[in-house]
Length: 278
Image 1 (spheres, rainbow, N blue to C red):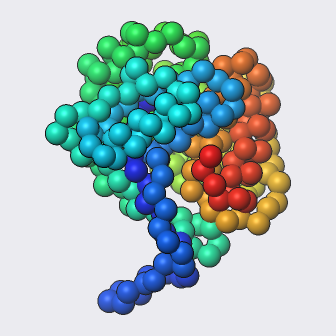
Image 2: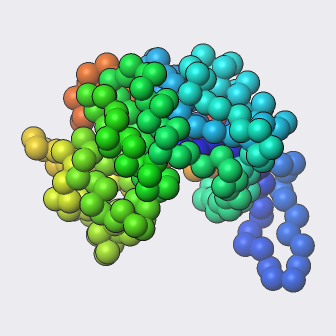
């Protein structure tokens, strides 16, 4: 549940210089994107029956996203195209090391409302719900109040008016190291420490992704780091979403958290070394 947008990706030879034109290393690519859409695609690829609660504009790009979802056999009954609204666009710069910088131009008219979330959740029967916590507070609150899933997963830094209290209703909170630091108020060099500290804020379990080092998890039974295979990184765009979508799919099939994290790390590692958001 969350945002879907168009990704326009350009590869650049180095950091842009103010006042000078930077030429891309190859033609720009245009793909379906947005964190929740990426996660839905990854969950579907991992074998889970998947639905996406979200909005896009009723324009050319919105139709593009709609086709991408239907082509991936994702249920679009809760994905709506908003009349007279524009679809959000993200510009992604990828440097020679595969690291990315993302600028997201959101379309406020397509942001989910609490009423939309409540209504669409009522029409779904699902064992796992993944929600972006940086959505508007009424949308996040509607998830907490109206979801009927066995497992509620939260992702991203909660909206500022919610703060870390938004973690308490979760069965699982998933973040990267930067997001974990923003929630905790400090950076931990050891992601297992960050995962343990996040769990103290209320969720039953926490996962912190750590790039090339893998991902750490902490639950009532264990706290550990699942290492990633070392590969030649081409593009890290979408790696975190691939991780989370795969993890959610494994939890749908009732795999232990440690196994779900390991499969998520493996899927994300495969993505970054070939650079393709499949």
